[in-house]
Length: 183
Image 1 (cartoon, one colour):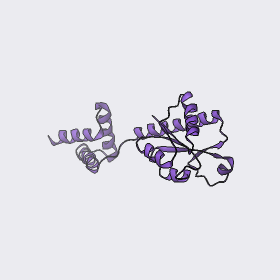
Image 2: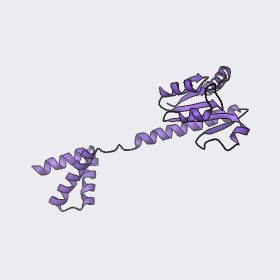
Image 3: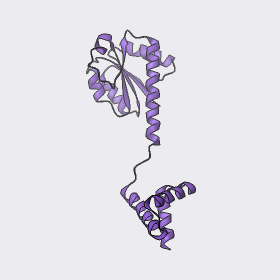
Image 4: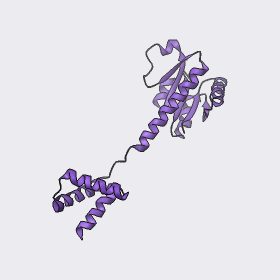
């Protein structure tokens, strides 16, 4: 689940934003009045959004952004003058003050959906094979190429198909091919 952290210098403002989000069905992990508190809270979470103002008691938004852990995005709430200045990093989503509740809710929803999609893509990404696993698959392909007169591509496809048919991964299938060929 995507965590929301609100980091604003005035605790009452942070509580008001939290109340708006919670009433809209968006849970908030915590509120902070300093950037250091926000970073500490974010370090204990996996993915999330930090909603902050331009300046906190101990740092400005850009310092906070630079120290955010992997998986966290920033939503900066600032005056139109600051946002329009062109100094804000393109990675940071901005909302101009005074804030419209509808804009805040829609923007946070959009950011949550983006983070959730990114998390799904990372989970679906196949893991990297270790060098010994690559060597095992290569050896099995070599045996198939020699004994069955296959090209490397045909041997690879054969191992891949056997892997899919048997419901095992390619490394296990390569081990089975090698054990069968050694007999």
